[in-house]
Length: 100
Image (cartoon, rainbow, N blue to C red):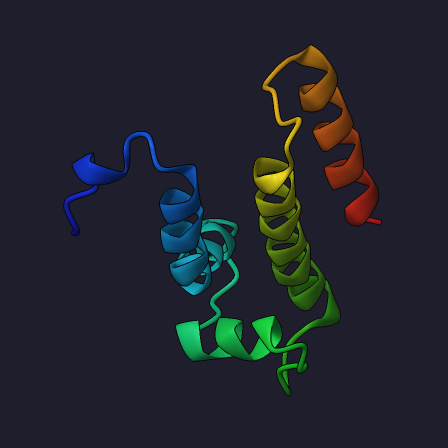
């Protein structure tokens, strides 16, 4: 694991590193859900290509996980980003809408 102490106050670098690890982040979450995707399959989904032989429901969960990370990255890069109750509620509502 990389030493990340140098990025404590560098939001851009932290977001860059998280985006770089996006396949692993999505892989970990979907596998915790019991969906056995490989990292290359997650990378295929990140490229917008479907993975043959996979259940649509599993793919939907993986794609929603990708979308939720992208949404979080967009929120973090906005100028007005502030963690508060309104953000938490709005983010949760958006995530719930993605599941359907």
